Image (cartoon, rainbow, N blue to C red; front, side):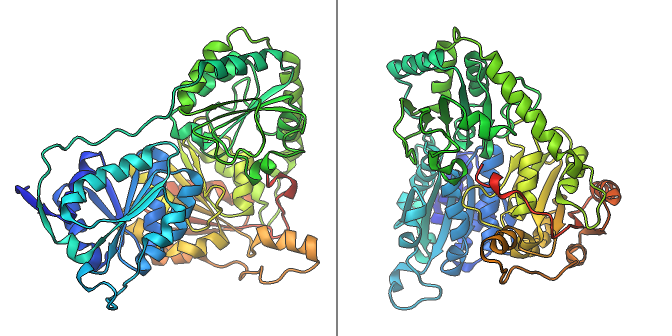
Length: 542
């Protein structure tokens, strides 16, 4: 590169120096200098059919790699189309950088094409939202934005660049060392000792771990701590798989008893949101003592008996060392193991159901039997994905990603695109509800154009099941909850250049999955599911 460059080139250089390999985007004139800069610095450009998918793909990149995913979108509607993924990233603590175009500064306020003041729109859903004012700040702004996104509590960062600023020229920076993200405070030894004492005194301890452990690279430390403390471990979010299903401390199907019956609960890298009933009974008993291990005190609604805020991985390592003499909890673990076994036995008939239309649990079981151990599963939907989240147990972390607590549908194609680009040798299977498919199904064109052979399995029951069943139960009526039955989404994917099959009977699921895997192109297995099969509402918040 020459001795100087325009703002777009300088930002691209900052991204490259920080390790960015892919830029997710949709072409718009306001960001042309950044796109040409990305080409100059060998950053692969992945262009989508909608800015929502570009931003979701960047977030999906962060979820599977724990690097900061980067999206670039044009001014005005390009950025408003990205708001939902940015909000989802904030809810998921996903490190994400969205770079926006902006109407020229020289004509600001005069009504330029797509003129909009973006930072006030996104500042409540980002860690930082600013406008880059000069080429001289471009490189430093780029590297600082990535470091901010990756510093706990991790999350999305936004900056936009006026069109005329993008073309301004500045000399290359002399110091190109990208700042390292902070890790958070070291654990307080007094609090570590207090937690260890609480664990020695507890008769029925339990732990629930969430995505914060994943972002802290703390999965090994979590396992060491659980083994030292000898307690049952439940997980949600990106902590799924941090203990394999055959580990003696792994618990999944006994949450009501394990968390609700515990006298001490460690809440590790997970907020007390609706999934844990905001920390209230019956999910966590009123008399239970609570210990928090997290980046900070965000959404900690109950006063703790002890708390370790800062570097989650370091805190778990310290606890593992401090808890080596903790008494064993054999009776408590065996009690919960019995409840696990009973719950699985109750579900067994659903996994074996030969009904047609197909029961979603049978579909999930067939997918589970088809998956490689290191396959990445992407969930995008309501009831169908709830069945998958309940029954698909992954043997390692980073192998099940879903929209998270923000619950934004349409994330699946972007997540699957990023997962396969980051892991080209692994199976990537997208589980989509038929309703969710409608949000971003056209981005199968993106998957085809970029030759990204993911397999999409649609649980097609012809309804908005997450709304229809509860609405009928609560109100006795269901309004605006029906879709066209049997819609041929497989034909849509075929028309876009992929492989598609319709499946109507359970015995045909596995052969269809095998053919999809051999197709070598993005594939859709469209399975007609029973609209009467309802996911048990008592489990939705768990």
